[in-house]
Image (cartoon, rainbow, N blue to C red; front, side, top):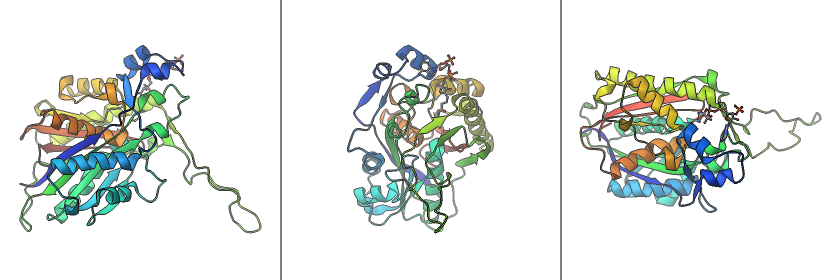
Length: 340
Ligand code: UT7
């Protein structure tokens, strides 16, 4: 009993770009990319696919797995840094329409690669408050449309895709919460705001017409992602291991008792260093980076769905989902599967 993940789903676009394809247009090699990142390939959205269409496919699959009708969903929380529109209407509203979730509120949440953990916590609060309703939590990204394909140090890292979960609360209304096994940590460090940035917002002032005060030209629309890889790398290892360890300590357990860790996958070497720091064998971490690359807010729910469909998660397993990203943001959730 309690707040539970009732079903999971994910979607990866069929088009795959291998490192060798990038090496045909940039000064790089499959050997360099794989040895420095653990990535061989990434899925790329083709024309007609967007963050909302991928999100809807992942969510539909999660609804089916949860045996849930779209009308039962009370809220859609969609984590993304690559919304269909920038920034409104929200991608969540488009998904609400695509799925026919007629009774759902819907909003996007932006916490970069930690977005899914943030979204899950928002949804957990919702179903805690409204136990008769269910929540759809989605991470969806179309990163290949915002990266600089001439920058070999960043374009190799990212891919597209979506993952989703349906959250429900099967505690009878009015009964005191029994969710003692769950805990979430959410954090941020805005001092690292320049480590990963996508420009093109309202930060840059426009020249005003001196006579009227009206801006003389419209804002630049298209923007691209820029990152300081080294700084993110060091932060990521600290954040992932600290959040996971702090969660265990809070719940009176130790990292060695964890059955599975679903860490945001930005670089295989970050995961390896995190495993070493936590003194955990690497096989406790779900790894799919080799073929999906970094899918930002979608990375954790895609991994979770793959693990569920591979039969790797059994009732009673202790798992941690932990992420970090631009902001800087970080966060993690500990749960005894499938309770939250
Ligand atoms: O999810 C959050 C976002 N993710 C991240 O921010 C990723 C975190 N950081 C990383 O994954 C790593 O820092 C990178 C993969 C981005 C870079 O790896 P690195 O081992 O830190 O390489 P580096 O930046 O120190 O570059 C070493 C050399 C440089 O050449 P010089 O200056 O030493 O001559 C780069 O120009 O490797 C060069 N280089 C490449 N060479 C071939 C950088 N990218 C490439 C490339 N192919 N794709």
